[in-house]
Image (cartoon, rainbow, N blue to C red; front, side, top):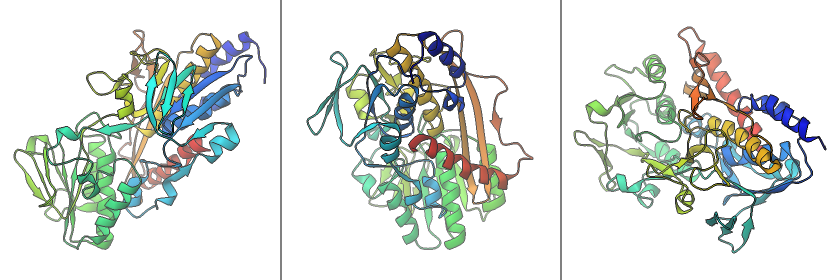
Length: 431
């Protein structure tokens, strides 16, 4: 489809207002005379969405998605696997439709280096890819040095399961093998980290499994934070479903003020330790402190925080022009590090990349984040927020635009919405 420069600018202005909210898909293809080469690193919610929508906006742009794995297991939904509600097959997706339906070139290889000056990406297999614009969506890595006794090797027996796949399967096996009456310890990470409500949904889903299969067991959360995402909603559900706060509680939360700031793992004795708490457990799920994935650091895209500073309007790196960073690796506060936020950021980034390649003004974006959590199979809770670009070029919340599930909200309906939300976002990302 060939359109004029004036029409392209008009469409950007109209669709850009909803680029992160789902209105993006209403914009027609924006093909131009000159395409360009875009390379995208990482095939999660950020990278896969960006690849798809750049091609939808302008099919003349060549898009290459580099992802080490041939399939992607989503972190959203992985807690449901632990709760017995879905299987690993249900949350694992291929890139076939991105290739066949949208013309994205998929390269299954590991990125070993980025040369920002030469605009090239080096691959483990020996190839080198050139780009006009690079989108980096590498996800997270762990700060192993901040936890005594815990590293990637120990994680093969004491899983973090914060990257879905084999780690999820390992944790699931350990839960199934645990005797009734056992204790599951979840060591939650400090802020900032991927999926703020995730550890507490995980505790809920594990408690759901234990309630059905090992009712004498319990889950204990050690948390270095004094509060957590959707805390009131989670605790309300825990009281209703798992006896929270009673002597028969299946879930116990130990926050920062009660010694939840864990610093050491003793793999030999299966225990987690803080300054004031020594917790022995039958199964330990230790989720360490986090940072941007290693390739972001080696490419010089991270600052002292370990995350990647970006321009709020375009997600272009503040350290290396021509490179955009989206998803969990970016500093996009107050947007959370979540799959839905990554999907929203990717659409905004896609508009920016196409605009920059065409030499037209980048539209002013908005973003949205919606996060559902299951406390039980028929007990859902949610949080939603719309974000806008502020006058000083930062990302800010739109006042009055969101919130959490109200006291009169049907938890059963919210659970149904949660499953629909998941099915829709994976379709939008991978299909």
